[in-house]
Image 1 (cartoon, each protein chain N blue to C red):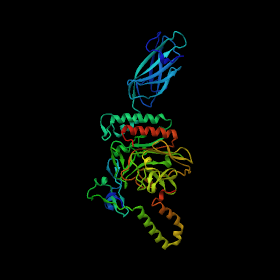
Image 2: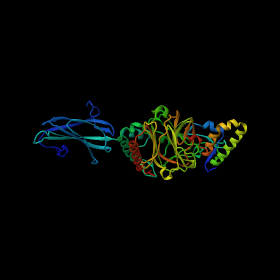
Image 3: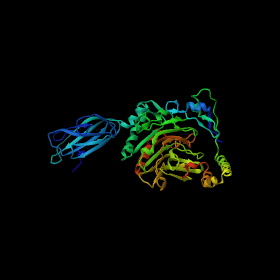
Length: 385
Length: 105
């Protein structure tokens, strides 16, 4: 049987069909727009003149890209809205393939794909407008650019099963503002309970990202892994735009119960050492400087005995098999380690950080999807190392 | 000593400003250098009145920290040989790693 999609639209041996998009599975609320990532429900209706046995639902953006949503025997389907933001058309094609000559009909409705609702929520909260306002003059990034980049970024995160849902916080240091940098991409409420960062000390937020001073700069995420994460589980990633010098105990992120429990990432410390920990600190000696910037992710994926450190090229820098001992019962800091309530090991002077985030434990595939999405966002902004 | 600078303030001022926002979304964080003097960064100091200009901070090098710890050990061992015996391994580890004790498993 040839695909229904090979048939011409708009004629045939008579008959007609209509298509309607709904926001609910009960088909009670018709809609003409939805955000990327929303689930909507499409149904073929008002069939007359023939009895279709095969249906196809298609979305075609006015930019020209087409998406086959469904082809099969059902006269309805759901769709997780995707494609480029803007106007397009939803088509239904129906055919009675059961007999010859076949009869068929098609119909279309204008439909607008709105920006990803979660991306829009953060951009709106921090006041980045979808227009020509420049938010990074050095790299020529406008608000309209960021709205597009964010829709792409969120779509990439949501395309990997369970990745977006595993997130607790992400911060992007765009816009030269502590007030923008403090808002969690995954919960953009201006509240500590939403893991809004409290920045302390002489931070610089500029076109290069977030710059530490090595003496008193840190951020309190208000995120306590002891209460927020399950045992044997957790991940942290960073996109760093400078190489660590190794002249101080410069720590990117962390908290510690000084007895035993650490969550920490120190790309390079004195004596050419690196440290990482999801519930258990491990030391890695003598890593080449060339691999210590860009994307890095450490993860313990529901595993008491394995934690991994992934680097910018996607390879595993180190695998550690020491046992998880627990999460420190303190808020995690950025640009320092919270040592039982006090910031220590400040991130060194001049370190440039673009983005970082905290997730439940991530699988290898999820790390790779996160790495790809973050690196694409960095490339779009012009921040690739 | 390295070239990192700060603007020195009084302890009273440090206590007064700690935790107050100096720009939207960012709070003062006065800290002490290795000599016990209170300071803030130049960025924070721009929002304070009656403070001086930036000066180099006193910060021990790793070698200086090791020397201070050796002096400390000597002092303690003179006071209590038993204390020294109990902590010798821990302290030697600290010395070996150059002031990075908290990071060592």
